[in-house]
Image (cartoon, rainbow, N blue to C red; front, side):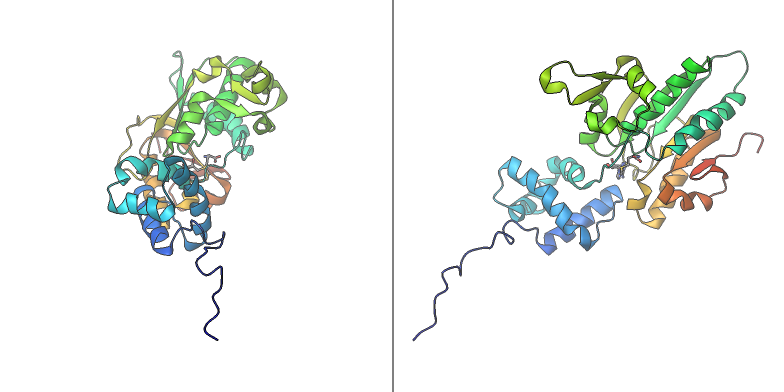
Length: 299
Ligand SMILES: C[S@@+](CC[C@H](N)C(=O)[O-])C[C@H]1O[C@@H](n2cnc3c(N)ncnc32)[C@H](O)[C@@H]1O
């Protein structure tokens, strides 16, 4: 008897269908590493595969291999890079994430910054959420500042800049609409003051930041890997939280020192708790876990 023909010989098992080939993953990892600084070790292959599949489907490519051929061999990158970056960035964020930083902001950093301003003028504080994701961090900062102005009757103006590399996240920040389950960490009084609930049936599971708060916050695309940043150099507080962890050590140092150049003397850099050790190697004064001050003009 000849060889038995297995009837599933030519079938691709569901698990094999539309996989991201190792060579393609390596090309994507190299591209993302060079353009964004984000490390994509082999363990991230499944994650990248899952996220890019959505893009492949929406564009109507046959599979991931076809899509990667388009990216790397048919000049597809020009238009697609932004979407590949959107797909691979990790955007996890929350309102009042690492809450202690916001208590320190209200009770220590703002008073210190105001004490360095000339008496008599209305100070304008500039705060920067330098990897803002969907804007939850930027709006948290704005809520804290707005409450400070109202409750302590402090005379100050403030603006918050949110920047990120992901255009999808920046669009979410600009829209300022969040699922209701995301607002759990916002203190009750602030929920009343700064969030509006959707009226229509379909919008009831969403909240939107009120316009009075939104007008203090703006969003811009900025790649922390760029050699210079088109941002003023007298920023009072830079939040750089939960992004350095995705970068190589040398990149972390370069990004931090570039950002320091945008802080005014006496300004503050706030790093995520898992990144706060990076700050201890800088010649800065530590005020709280992850919170560092640039020397004042008098040293
Ligand atoms: C995990 S989120 C952190 C969000 C927020 N800072 C927080 O702590 O909740 C990291 C963000 O960094 C952004 N990111 C990654 N690489 C970047 C780069 N090279 N330039 C600017 N943003 C970047 C991602 O798009 C993502 O939104």
